Length: 481
Image (tube, rainbow, N blue to C red; front, side, top):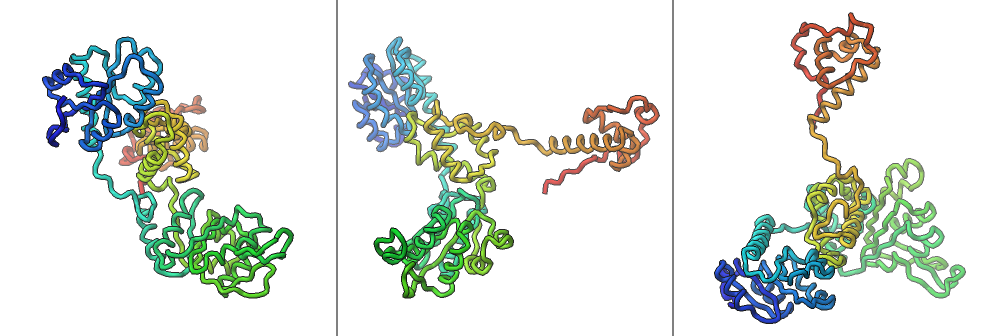
């Protein structure tokens, strides 16, 4: 076997992993234009892959292959940058352990003796796929900013607003649907603010019973109520000189709203059971999925508290409006949970990408991440499919073209007009603003039945071409704006 010395040799290098070097194999590969490198163990193979950027590997599986042996190979075989071809003994593919290993971790396999064109074809195919993957993957831009993933215009605008909000102490309200990442936005503001060295304290106002929420926010003295065996510092006091994040503020009980308003106005709190005021310096960021304006109109949320909290307002875009960010987030989730699966997941199939793009994602980013994590575990192949994602079948339906939309709208308009006028063509045509001749032609083009028109020959007979310039005028216009 020949050692790799120069970068020029790497492009046509195959890494052969076996217990001992095979001189005949090395000569055969050299005669076929391949540079062969040898590794006795997978640990050595991993180091060579990292050092020399090898794209094609040839691994020899012994005839007495055990589960322990195959498990030891998995760490090396999981590496995405190398496409592996397995050498197996005749009949070894019938072994369930071996066949499953090949399906999960190998690009192809050859049966020994394999010094033939089949081996060169498999290596060439693996090499070609590696080059194809390399040419398609452009230098990946930043996935986002502020520890957030997203590159659509709505997210770029959110990043700019985060930077502006970070330099001031004014209260910030973050609006958005559940699962869009409102707490991430709050943390990003805190991290970039002058208070970043101090505490970031978050509390979910909807997760704490109303009877306990006030004690959680303001703390209590010993003996303030049954069970208060010692003094407790509240969340607001814990956030002194830092940031307090009030999540799901829209679900805060009305009685707690008044006490919170007093704190925002005065900058002081009193622990439950206490008698002294405590000065607290806190920057407040709040968020909710509730429509606070409507809650104020309905009397469920105090208008004065609303105006105190909503000095600066940010809006988290829902995932369905983020376009290409869906695929970006899916790949990010896959990178986080790839190791959860028992198979080597290479990515998403084209039908999976289409299904994710067409789905509405009511649970937003949280739903997408959980969906991908489940698919990693349940996937049966090397690529996650639409079936693995478990999305509704409607998500896989093809998107209608503009021509299809226009045709359907035109047909519906004709049928409704005919029904309104008892299938009298003259009256229906007048209603639609076209001549009888144009209406008759449109009915024929759209295959609209003349049900109910029998017996009215004078009205339903095919008209002569007596219509004017409107004959080529479309009945229904569909705006693309």
